[in-house]
Amino acid sequence: MSKGQTAKESLRNLSERGFDGNTSEVALVLGREQEEIDAILADKISVDEDLEMKVYGIADERGIAIGEKPTGGQQ
Image (cartoon, rainbow, N blue to C red):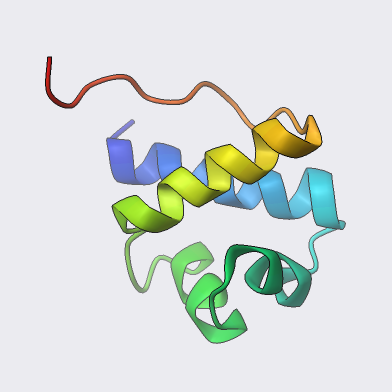
């Protein structure tokens, strides 16, 4: 599974487990438009790094299990 796919699945898990699948609420919490969240979940666009960080941060802050945060980046 690619990093982008992992981030998308984490976003999907956040939406389903923390917001009962309500992408409008997820978008509001993440500071994005609902259309953008819906497009990501429909594989029309990719998750950018800022959104990925927000997804993991919100999940951690709220105690929502969404999967492992990918490791990598600069060492």
